[in-house]
Image 1 (cartoon, rainbow over the protein chains, first blue to last red):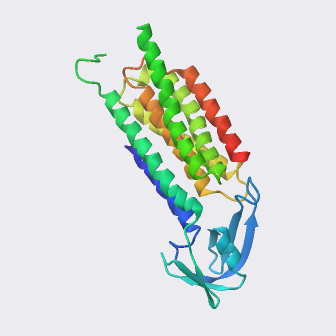
Image 2: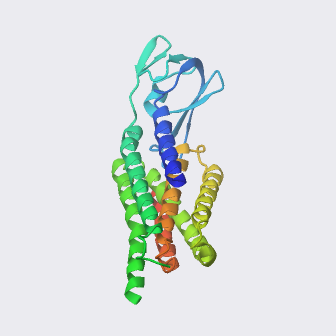
Image 3: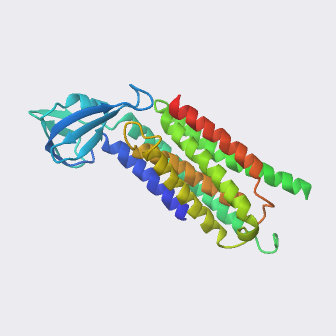
Length: 133
Length: 149
């Protein structure tokens, strides 16, 4: 059960992290102080887009959000809102492809874990009289 | 006795390969644009499977028939996850510590622990260490390939 709970926690963390990059779950009320793109293993495909806010908070955001926002712009939104106010404009927010696909892969992963846990429990408690050690 | 052992070996091999392959295929198809996610999952599975198989093999005489054996495997799995976090934060840290990479490799580690617990049940004669090491090596190499290729 510990392993299943750990797996569920990791899957939920995976979903939240990919969701947070859309900024949809986040509440924001600050000003963009700096923007930075850091290269990863596959430049152009898995670059890390970072926004540093006036509050000191650093956001890892999806590329379309990074591209739409400018240095010095105030950004404001409520948690779980699908629109982000920046300057005098409003940016509609969408879930990323990563998040939408993770919504499929993570439950499937946990289903496999649960099935393995059931097998482990059944095999560790063999029927009485059939598998005496 | 020999056919029982062979059946156990086949069961262990299928247990090591089928669930990991099924999840890997799901990653590969659904997240084909991010092969590094698949890579981290496979590497986490392979690395942890190898470590846990060695630990289980070494401890089986003392622990396998004890109720404490599963706790040893869970603790070893958590240690592997912590080691993975250390690697992700140091030698494999490129842009920044990526929580998604960490979660994916840790999910692989949890899967490895479940697989080792199934293989180490009371009816299994012995952990098939050789096939576990080969399977672990395969997933570890595949993981590095998909993470960096």
